[in-house]
Amino acid sequence: MIEALAQAEAAVAACFDTPAWAAAEDDLVAALDDTHRIEQRLAAVKLSLVRELDGRGTATAQGASSTAVWLRDRLRLGVGAARRLVELAATLDTAPDGVRDALAGGAVDVEQVRVIATTVETVHTNAGAEAADKAVGVLVEWAAQFDATLLRKLGTRILDHVAPEVADAAAEAALRAQESRAARDRHVTISEQPDGRLRLTGILDTEAAATLRAAIDPLTAPSGPDDTRTPGQRRHDALGDVCRLALRTGELPDNGGDVAQIVVTTSYDGLTQQLGTGALDIGAHLTPEAVRRLACDAAVLPAVLGGSGQPLDVGRQRRLVTGPLRRALVLRDRGCAFPGCDRPPRWCDGHHIRHWADGGDTSLANAVLLCGHHHRHLHHSDWVVQLGGDGHPEFIPPAWLDPDQIPRRNHYHRRN
Image (tube, rainbow, N blue to C red; front, side, top):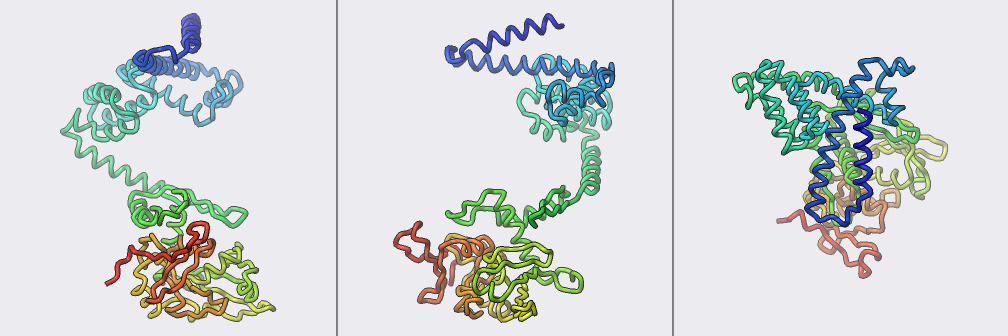
């Protein structure tokens, strides 16, 4: 074997030294096909070596705790890749001859082998050895046309082809098992970072996943031509918007005897002068700009303190766009009023055109409906909002965007 591998390595080196630019296009395509096939055949050899070394206990004999750890050090692999290599070698060792022959012949790749072996094992459990043998032939044939991902999807209905008499019952059993696994594995982990941010990780079951997608998908599309957020940032903002909407309903359970809400504490002077930071009730701090923006939000109850720290005002209702005033605002703006935005009213906050801390009152003439993204955007950009002569909001773009600064309006929300 060593001599054959040495010859193969020499042949590969010769191929690498041959300039590809000199070959005809048909020859390049044929060479690519041959290279891929040889790569898979070498993968089969590699797996057989790993399986034999693992069976002999070579890794532990050389002082490693496992074959995966030994492979990590010897082949300079990540521990996950090394572990998968050992697992795949074991899978291939017990797989039907047709699967091993397909990999050795270069007809399938290692990821397809993993899918085929798992699918054939499921068929064997549900329909017996004869159906499993048929499944090998069908899956290898499909592997010539489909990658591992599509092959896995097709494999979920393999019994329709090799054992239709048990297919429906097996599919129902598999669905129930999948549901049981999903219920067992569901979780969300919230890890607080040193700077007050949160890291979210987790796995949602099928129903919760569908609910989340239904809630945030409408909010993850770019909100207009000036929306430069990445997809990840849009999903982040959409999740925040959904939570704000939930807070706004007033239907969440009490938390420590209080309604669910965000409490921001700041000094009055700092807020009016745009200099002071704010503290959330969970201990994190916010910039002055964020505090002023949150003070517009009906889902936030600002706690404004005097110079000595005594509460001057907690949740002053006349500062918040609620009740009849919000209904009038919705009737007027019909949704986010920022040009080019189609967000509906339920996703929007009432924004003070002239901030209440600067002397602005809470009235229809001093309010505009904005979605979460454009609310943040307006607080952190050079756009200016005003009411036009007909009492409807219009937005003046910054000079760098439009030197003439012609006011723009939202035309998505049609009015009767």
